[in-house]
Image (cartoon, rainbow, N blue to C red):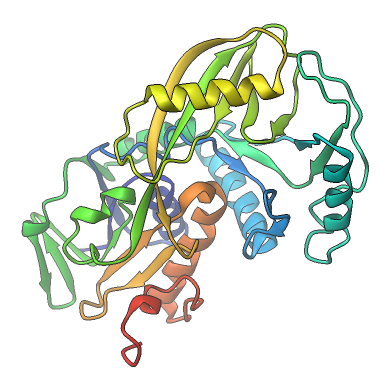
Length: 350
């Protein structure tokens, strides 16, 4: 018998897998590669919601855990996946500058918003009003991370590529039986695929489609991440990742002409040089209307657990939410009410 069967190997799944292994637990991970939102994600981590100038929920706590988590993973996988980069918010007016400095005076935002106006001129971007710098930011190369981690799981016989068959899941004394695997617990980290899960499909998981580009822009001299209506992330060799769109209607992972047009228009609002689209990606982010993840244990089946709804902030949320679920299962440490799926039970039942 193993300790954990984990369904899904996106950011949620590998975060839980690594925390379980780090704590000496045995695991097996199943995935059919049907969900690609983690693979094509921008991978940015940013402690500030720039549209509203508000702190990301428990930002500092998440960043501290995240930094430790990816540092240990880099040593384990022998590759660099976490890249510290400033995020610069381009200002379009004096009013935007004033709003920035007013926000930087808020106690919650002081650690994250620089009070120094960045006036550096970047070739290819017209910025007469300069930039504001967000601190403690960067990006995780999610595609590289997931590929390397799955390779690690494969080499150690901890991974099976297959579609999960819910009919083959049996809840037995002391855990679950799935085909030839017996486990004490099963953790579903399926992303948008949760809608096929009979045990958790009634949870209010929404899907928000995002589209991104990889562009080539040889004249764009940029060594920071620029964020306005889209982000521009330098990848090296004159390549940049640009995104993202938000579509709440379309639940497919196919790139669209509508998304392409929207991204191109937004890019042209920021950069003044020529660019060429090298690749166009799309994926459906697992989002929740109250902007909090779905973490917890089934109301009736106490060996069935869920880790989902990381949305657009998966690289920040993944390690913290996986740790919270692991400690809840293993040590009965209560989950924060804001992430616990019990919040969606009818009143009087939670």
